[in-house]
Length: 256
Image 1 (cartoon, helix red, strand yellow):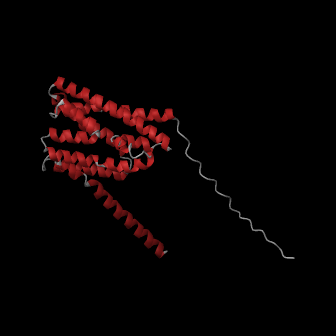
Image 2 (cartoon, rainbow, N blue to C red):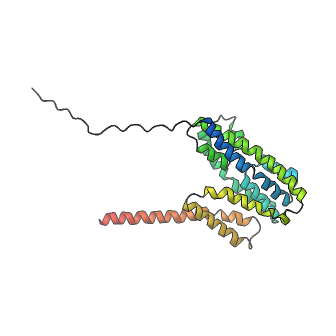
Image 3 (cartoon, rainbow, N blue to C red):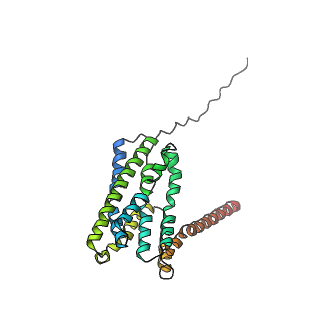
């Protein structure tokens, strides 16, 4: 009679990771409204800055309606106010807004809109809508967050742009009121919370240094374009350091 040996595994099966819990619609709407209202009110500063740069009320409102990417709008009117060439100013604004195309590639997979809806949704692809959308646990919440943030921000941004431009015309010389500082102040307020890692902070700091050094030497708008070189420069240095660390680690393991 042959003996049968039963081999039992001592390893316990690993339970599946629980799925992210659904987020209540009220919480998604609250977060989206908070971002939309907070940033949308900054359109007032853009309206004032644009009017102070010499753009008409119609031109100012058209920028917010058709361009709708705050940092690029501020960069454009800031360069024009400093006497820069319109083509150079437009090029700087274009490259600054090009990041939204990369946001769109990510959001396209997350939101899953139909082809007919994508061109309309693309107009709302900016920093704030991207942040709210990617923070959601599922597609339904992502769509809700994107829609509420985009609608709130687009509506308020354009309304406050109109009010700011009208107010600037009533005030006259905005430089006398110190409103020319509104553009960089708002831009820094939007940028600062996004700098979460040391690499991002170093890249931003280097970009500032490049602008400050080249500003007196180059035509208006060109320093902004050159400041974009800060990001690849920092990434190259970081890559070299990581490879050097890996080589030292490998060498140490080989000797041991």
